[in-house]
Image (tube, rainbow, N blue to C red; front, side, top):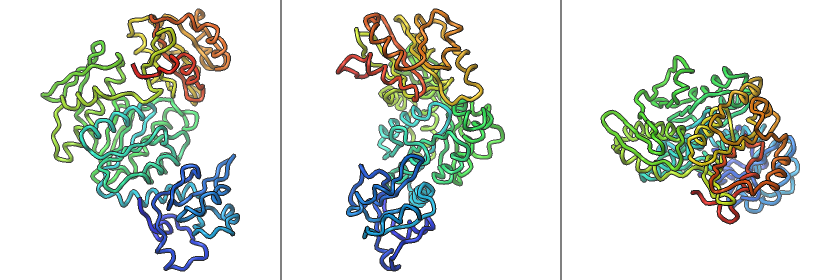
Amino acid sequence: MYLSGLDIQSATRGQWLNMMPDQIEHIQVEYIQTDSRHFKQNDAFLALRGPHFDGHLFAPKVANKASALIGDEQGIQAWADLKTPQLEVSDTLLALGDIAHAWRKKLTNTTVIAITGSYGKTTIRSMLAHTFKALGIKTTATHANLNNLIGAPMTLLGIDQDAEVALIECGISEIGEMQRLSEIVQPDIAILTGITSAHAEGLGGLHGVAYEKSLLLKHLRPQGWCALGEGVRKQLQNIQHHYIESFVDWELQGNQLLLRYHDESASLLLALPAPHWGSNMAFVASIAMQYLQQQKRHVSLMKLADILASWQPVQGRLQSISGINDCTILDDSYNANPVSMQAALHTLAAMPKRRIAMIGDMAELGDDAEHAHKQLDVSHIDMLILVGTHMYALHQQHPTSQWFASIDALLAWLNKHQSMFTAQDTILIKASHSMQLDQVVSLLAKQGDTHVI
């Protein structure tokens, strides 16, 4: 990116301290950095503030390399001895979003695609990025889980002006966050993957989740369009924007995925018999088709199928790895909600070996928490190992299951019983991120050999 001192002042309505107008014009910012550990020459340092940290304290570490320092009225008082240009703003988090929006307005040749939903955001983003890059389309995408009011602006700021596509993941947990993200990102294409009670605790129940997620469409650009997952099309009425109406059909037969679009058909082999992978791939193919038609490019369904066949899941998102005693681990430990948990259980149920589900609490479900855990379908699962307060409700329905109150209790038990797992076992490991079941993956993965199978 490149923004001048005047660009940043205009975007944030901030005030440069002790500087003449001609000096402000010569300030050149190549990136906004909030973490002093990752700072590079000519970055501007923006000091974020939180309940347990104050970024203003780290400004002296980077001042000599910084093109500018950005802070609030209280924090900037400690910078009196620093000679680096300083911009005072009322709120640094708001300023970060405002600066990102200013840069977004300069991305006139980039199709900005925003992705939200209660489930599938990261997988859809990953599949789209894989597809576009394989087609030779210069693509920038959200890294890891940087999808909140800090991460999404940082992703925007990292987009080069010659990028053809930018994939911005937008995650929320509180009312008002999507309104702000929509203002910042102003997408050309908005994708809503699905709506469930995930984060219902902070968003006012299922109705609140649907309403807040739909706010991504509020700042959709003129001539923009949206892609709505199957469930969303039923839940949201009176969509005022153009949206995809023609979707790629799909059918999963074992590990073989069959795709159909108008008079075209194609097939590909999946690494796992995962119905939600099939659904996601058909959805991604539909979005890619619409985008390519808009760009006056023709790519066959067979070509898209060949590309999707080489896609690999993101770490911790139903990743098949080698485990101790040659067992197979399905590492889906990164996160969980009712829809993704059930999808993972259905995938496990289709596996030919002894099926072991090692699953933990799904967080932030509000009043729906007990019901959501109790109604999980664990039929065709040979061994059920549960962890967490909410999973006790499922344990009561399945008394032969093993239940542990905490991750520490589970790890202690596993350390004594690792020999029970064999090459005939497939173990699904899944829970909300806060349950830290990635520790279980680390314990049970074959040492030095955690490659994807």
